[in-house]
Length: 553
Ligand code: HEM
Ligand code: SF4
Image (cartoon, rainbow, N blue to C red; front, side, top):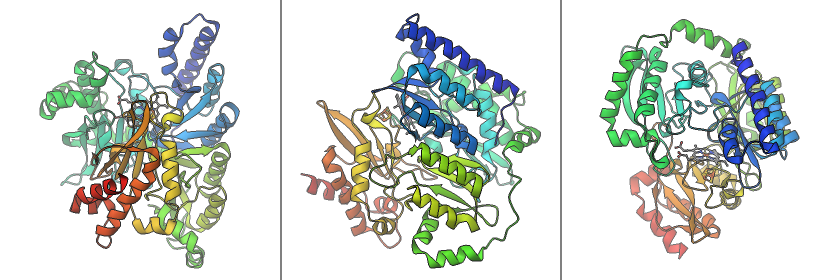
């Protein structure tokens, strides 16, 4: 993985001591809360419902085992023994004491981690997919490109005060596993007719109050222009984005107001000044950065492992887990494993305890190559596991409640922290996830349902990606009470779509029943092998609505 150079090291260390001084001045009363606010946000520190919340960056979701051990240590020493992985591949701690925040950042700096640009109107954590570098359908490893974007955007003075926060996602595989089109800028790499690696660039996506899928503004852009083109987009946004109204400040509003073609023309115009300049990437530069990511330690093993195949035949539960949560790897004899953080009732999606983190770090060293990934679905991935070790890993993951074979199924719920922690929430989201997980605890039934995503947000800010779930749940406030609005038809991936509201909202206690009615309708009208989202596309929303509202009254 990427190693900091001396510039990175110095920069992060200096930032820690600067923040230590700022916190000391806040604690002594020299700084008012108002003066302190922008300073703490620049270091990822929010003031939430019960305590301070710290958001730590995990660039493109890649962690070393040493870094994960440090995250476990922070959870245990400074929080309540767990952390929460987010849809932006970051980790959040919910119970932080202000006076300890500088110590946390100092400890994080020892493993090349920090909270810089995890908040504020700047370029946030660059995201890509969790299988980057190991996916069989990959056109190019996107991690070096993401790292180049990270280096360029970190403390870049030109883009430190954008009209609003800015999110960039990259996908360099045939299948989009990074929810690219819900980002301010999204980039797909593909091969053009001449077999060259080129970029399809999208701008103006985002969820929140006005959910919009991004629009294509350019295709066939040689990948070497990634940085200069993104820079041109940011310049146009920085110049024209609305700073007078927070709710209209995202690039999606600008793209909509100007029209995609006019926006794209502005970008092209700006790009002319940057094209072929110093930020043009070269094969050499890609290779230089790629060098840090390349795993040279893969063993030469057979694509088939007889012991593994016997274990599969002998153990139905193991086989079920392999089928759901284990993916093919591009190196023969290896596989990528998704450890589900959604074992069902009792554990909020994305919450991982310090003990679990330490186990995962140990498994990464013992069975993998010391690397871990965080998926935007809030799961944890071991990208490089030898086939012959899968059974031993499974056995241990079962003991740690991390082996639920529900990847992509109804209980693989994405949920934000909602009203339990977040001061912006209209309603709680975790108890809704809990009640649904409780209702659908029959794994065989879930497997029979097949791919079905359910996403929950506690307010319109959409941190839980509710618009993009096949079923989406949004917490709303009605006269001071918590209600839930339901959307269906959202999807991520190559066929991204935003869900549509099915009708009036529901009370918390009605929610498991509502989901049950939606599932029931699907089971009644699906044809063999058809996914929920395809059935919905074929028959329309009416049968779903009719069943839900018939029963809900
Ligand atoms: C409790 C602390 C949190 C606070 C105060 C917070 C705040 C916000 C706000 C204000 C927005 C709306 C911004 C806008 O649309 O311009 C937003 C959007 C978002 N947040 Fe959070 N959030 C929190 C936690 C999370 C968590 C836990 C996740 C992931 C599970 C997350 C991921 C996102 C995402 C993906 C968006 C989508 C909006 C977009 O970019 O279009 N946030 N958040
Ligand atoms: S969606 Fe709303 S409730 Fe949930 S974390 Fe984001 S801001 Fe908080």
